[in-house]
Length: 285
Image 1: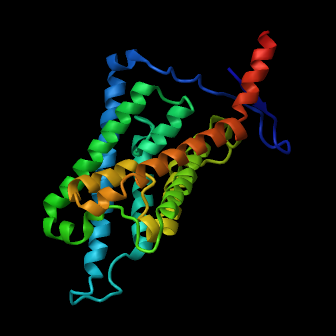
Image 2 (image 1 turned 90 degrees about the vertical axis):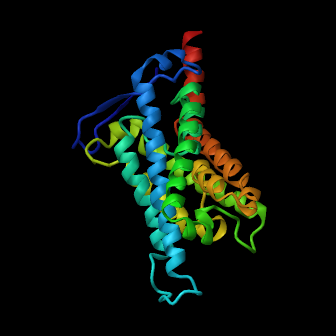
Image 3 (image 1 turned 45 degrees about the vertical axis):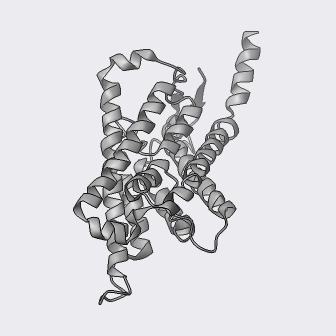
């Protein structure tokens, strides 16, 4: 296991040690015997349910208040900025609430990236993804149950590629947006950063929520912003219209590619995992 020692900066702070946690086993059947595993899966399900419930309600509420066919002030509603805040704010809240239980993934792309970096086992990764997708479907089901007429009239919060944009543009937006998010997750939870900057209290969910907020500002006009396959799947299942399903592949392929690139960049470029492994091999040879 690698161990780095950070020296004091400008003589003000003492040196800090840090240990990289060992890689998670690829397949760990013992997890099925632990309550902590099931508790984490339940936390991912509930968090994703709440995430979709609040954010989809925000989207539908905004569309209703700005409907040109209704006698409403077109300046009403939260606007695109408010929608972005709803998504970013909910991620901040839910990651803060669940980080100590499940890690606060709430996104199959984040789980996939952490799996590639060997932060979670395959069993945990697959279980999280299933729980997240089911939670998203149930969250959207609640929205439709409470506001069925508005839900169907205003698109159910489903992600769709906007008119005037090509499939390639939409895919690129999802790749880059997810890269920003997953890169932020790795950076905010990096044990080396925590040890080096221990004198600067940084709440990890805060930059993650801001990353979601900023990406939504940039890509809502293009794809409605997916960067989370569960967020795209839930509305598509409940709304169940052809356009939502036609574009669904964009919201899986793009985020998974973006997450893989972020995992590679952080682990093998910034943290030089390949070089550390080679040095360890040579020292043991």
